[in-house]
Image 1 (cartoon, rainbow, N blue to C red):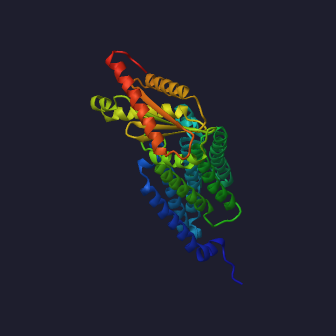
Image 2 (spheres, rainbow, N blue to C red):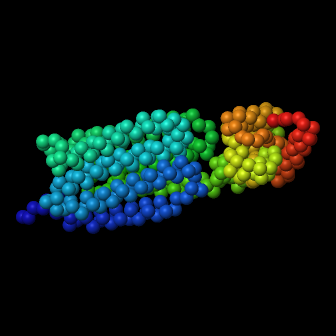
Image 3 (cartoon, rainbow, N blue to C red):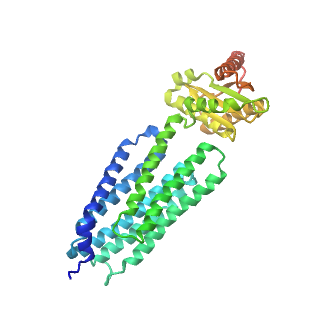
Length: 393
C-alpha cells in the first residue's frame, strides 16, 4: 500500500482548485478596486476601503507564493516564511478594516489622531513578531527554531482584538443612533465583520481551503454595493439626502398624514450665495453649503428628514409636529455656531419658508410651492433689512 504525504495529497487533489479560488478572488478584488471612485462616498471612507482591498490582494498574492512551494518538501523553510508573512498581512488587513469601520460609523478615531496612533501599536507588534519568526527560520535570530504556535497566538489575538473592538463599538453606536439611514450603515459593518470572522473560525477546523479569503470577499462586495446604493440617495458634496431621496420619503409618508399627524415642509435657501461664489470662489461656496447642511444635520432627529433640494436650496420635512418657530430658531442658531467655528470671510445666513399639510389629497408639489412662496417673503425681509443697514441672522 502506497502512503502519500499531506503535500502529495494537497498537490494532486486540492492544488488546482485552491489556485482557481485564489485567482477568482484576486480578479474580483481588482475589479472592485478599479470601480472605486471618490464620488461614491467620503474621501476618508474611500481611502480606508482601498487600503482594505490592497491588503486583501497582497494576502492572496502571498498565499499563491506559498502554494508554489508547499508541495515540495525541500522548501519547508521558505514555506514557513510565507506563512509567517501571511499572518502579518492578515493583521494589517484587520487593522485596515477596523479603521474603515470607524470612518464608516463616524467613530472617535477620525476625531482624535492620538487615539488613532495608539491603536496602531498592536499592528506594529504583530509585524515585528512576524518579522522575528521569519528571521528565526533562516537562523538570523535565535539559536533554535521557535514554535509557530507563539506567532499564531499573538497575531490571531490582535486580529480578534481589532475585529472585536469594531464589532462592539458598532453595536454600541447602533443602540444609540435614532436615524434609520445611520442604523443601516452600522448594520452593514456588523454583517461584513461576521463574514471573515466566520471564515477564520472554520479554517481552524478545516484545512487547505481558503475560508478566510472566501469570507473576506463578500464583505468587500457588500460594502461596495452599499456605498454605491447610498450614493443614489446622497448628495455628493454635503453627504445628506438628495432631492430624489426626500421625494421618495414624502411619497411614502404622504398617505399617512392627518389632522393629528401633519407634515411640515421647510425650504431653506442661502442668502446671497451667488455673491459668495463670485467674490470668494466656488471652494468657499462649497464650504458654505456644507456648513448649512451640517446645521440641518444637528436639527435632524426621529421624524425629521433633511436633504439638499438643488443648488443652494435645502429641504427639511418634519412629521412630528414640532413648533416651526423653534425649528427655524434651532437651524439659525446651529448655523451661527458653525460659522463662528469655521471663520468664514463672509456672512453666512439663510432664509426659511415653510408650509404644513394635514390632507393627503393635497398634492405634495402644492405644499412645496407654498413653502417656496414663504421662503421668498423671508428673503424679501432679509433684503429689506440689508438695505436698511440692519444685520440679521
